Length: 314
Ligand SMILES: [Zn+2]
Ligand SMILES: [Zn+2]
Image (cartoon, rainbow, N blue to C red):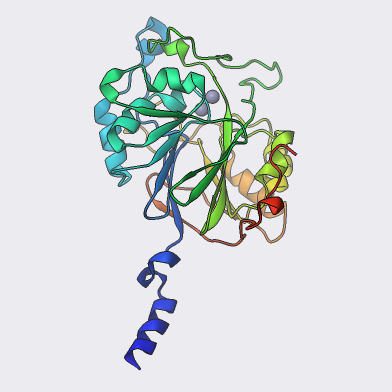
């Protein structure tokens, strides 16, 4: 009888049952994200070091600040991680990539541009493995499918890009050497849910089918093309039951300055309002607080049969 009662209690309180804990995520500031199943932690774009005017205007080399990295990881409760990814190689996505790898043990996984940055500083003892477009691999119970996409222009009307091209082979932490590099989105599948992590806010046609059928969509909203493009084209095509915006804070300031200041024109309220009407059932638009746990509800079963997976690049 007691065993039966305990079994019922365990069913009612998922915390009693390790396998029912599900996936959790945390926003780390800027575009930084951690995703964990309690055993394995994946990191995306974790950045804690910010440039100052001396980097922008005086040509000072831009290097990771170990104290900020340590404090940032501690504040998010991250001691170890298994893999760290970057959506692209602009400074606000990769400045701490080597340090995060060295500190947490996470293997940096990316393309040749990211490799030049991650392995440049021998002090950091970073580990690196190459990834390829649409070639899936496992990290713990996570299946990761990287998908190449394009970075948006910073001035959409003029189609001007910020530091396009590859990170140079003579990379030495020059501030303007943090070029765009390879640009990625990531589809993540796990027995406890399927996720899409995509820092590119603008609609990217080849991406739409690859990105569908996910429980949560983590999307960078800095520099969106328009509300219509972000919500009606991008978010609506993906139709995730939960949408979590990233990259909406005023990321040029240090973390301890103006903590709550948001990028001008980020239009969080307008995005929410438009998204509620974009598809049925209305998604949970979850604006994260830095370092707070985000619970991901499993609603969409990843296809067990690979033949039924959404065709990448279709
Ligand atoms: Zn960028
Ligand atoms: Zn950025």
